[in-house]
Length: 146
Image 1 (tube, rainbow, N blue to C red):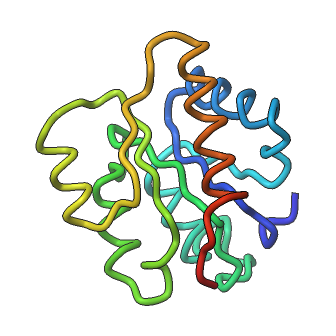
Image 2 (cartoon, rainbow, N blue to C red; image 1 turned 180 degrees about the horizontal axis):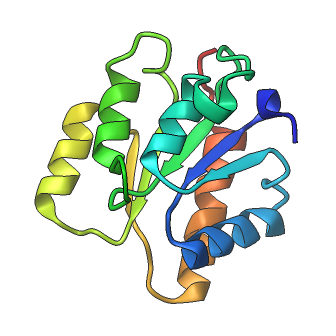
């Protein structure tokens, strides 16, 4: 896929959760323009067109970022902090999708400017429904600024 036409950036280190997310988005025809990265460092490289993504046009931002919190290298809170503190990326909608119900994670995420905080449902059916609804909202219903 052309990295310049990405609608969804999925930042998820758990292969099982990533596959379930992609499968759920595919069912509602929203996975065609999705890039999956496995940690926060890769996510920042993608967003800011560095490292293996250095040839990517940085101005072609994803329509939404689905971001896990607990990840190796760079955690989701730090990714969110860097995105929302940068003028060029602060308006990209970011949805935290995590298993963490920790009050401090929720407070910190909203203080940093997260657009939505979703605790992953444990069962597949609930997870699939939540992901499908998130995808539909952020890609079809929501009116984003460019």
